[in-house]
Image 1 (tube, rainbow, N blue to C red):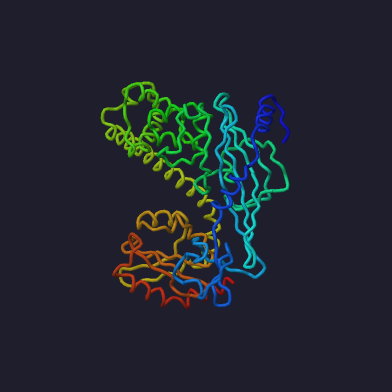
Image 2: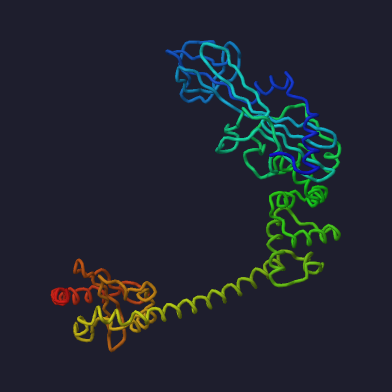
Length: 440
């Protein structure tokens, strides 16, 4: 895009002051950013770096082999006979005035068994970190639908141009996958903020620089040795409430061990949830952090448990109301079975005659016949086995197969009565079948 304001025009002007890649930089990138390979060739191994060939195939169990001629360590490559290529990226830390410039270089190496490797080396992106104005800008050559970090896709036919500043774009992030050119140039304005290549954190170098340049909180956290909170700030996990609390911790020299960092962030969220004063030392800097944290966790869990119970009651009420509207449909569909009576001594088995009966029996026996809406299963007939008017089991008959699908007692378990109840129902399967066919 074209520069549209004074600062963008300033970045474009500063970009013109950067020298092109030197011969030494190009040679270093070619040697350090791409893998070296060997391939099998007519029962011989061929080095694709120097084209030396020697007897024997590439070892099956070894991942690498050393060329006896050029002494380079080689990986195995499947070769198709028409040449192949590999690619990689390198990074140069440069500067222009007080601005740190991270230059990303793309290298493509063309390999052949009959020729020495040839290279295409192109600078594809420049990232500008301005500590004076605390801004970040980026220029790159454009991309052709690149999939995955550093897997090619650069539009090498275009020149570097200003792009929308998006530091989280994985396609231009360095991470730890690119080699860094040894002659690093870092402006003193950046090092004064605390930037170092030995940052002892899990943060990549460009994310680290972006954080301390664009966010004053990151510089404060770095200089206070709070590396875990620094990582939160850089990756957008440091809330305003947590930052307010941390400033009080710094003033009171209240130390938060590394193992408690995530718990402390959670503790501050709980304090905010309960409306506590986040500017108070009493809450922000507790004498016994573990005890204070666990107390709030337990309090929040009690509230959550109560809310779950209320939600459960409300959901059940809505389900009952919805089910009662379907009661007439259930009666109309199953009324032809209502006169069916199966009994043996004190056991009486009858078809369940209403949705209310599903609710009652499901509650008494702790069954899911109501929650799972068995009254809506058009190809099932649900019966209830009772002793002295008290439900002891529920039975489901599959009207397609005319077989007993299941019979369960209290807590959905098989009881001593289950085999007997199943046999009682199975004796009446012919009658159930007649009623079913009559209705059809």
